[in-house]
Length: 259
Image (cartoon, rainbow, N blue to C red; front, side, top):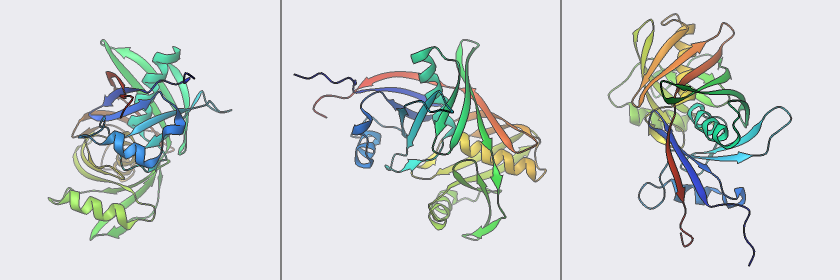
């Protein structure tokens, strides 16, 4: 009997309630149907997405594929990369790393602060395009390796509007609804492409910080408060964004052989 080189194990962690599974099994098992079944919170393991390690590249220490719970593939995920960086650090001992995602390279740093795991990620340059009106709302397009539309208001029906805006953009988009609190803080509600309402998102926080700082509504160093908690975001003068915050490891889970 041949023994697989792979386990059928997931490493589970969350960043502000945005939870991901790192797949330690055979990458060949991963397809859109499998991802949907695994991410189902009633009949599967349950997750906001699956992270699949890939071989290192010339420019990076490790590669990464990112899957949304609907089976589609994401170009980049800020919280996904931060969770993956914690997993990779525990596997290799490497605390500073470059992760190669389909949306570009991300530099991550893992540390311990006040007895907790803390991960910072340099998300790259957030590129802004001219505003467009969708579903009656002014939306600000931001590309940080994956697409976003920032709305500077929080309508009562923001979830329904998020779904409409997501599907109105070719290739679909992530949507953020923003309430400015003061110069150093914003409150954000997130409709994530392929996932729906989401408690937190690192790339969404990056897009929001870029827009509110560019429009002079907030400072370039601010706290983005999402339903899952706070993320610290810094926007550089050239539009490069760094995010930082805690990552909470939950544990490892084995798929049953008959599942």
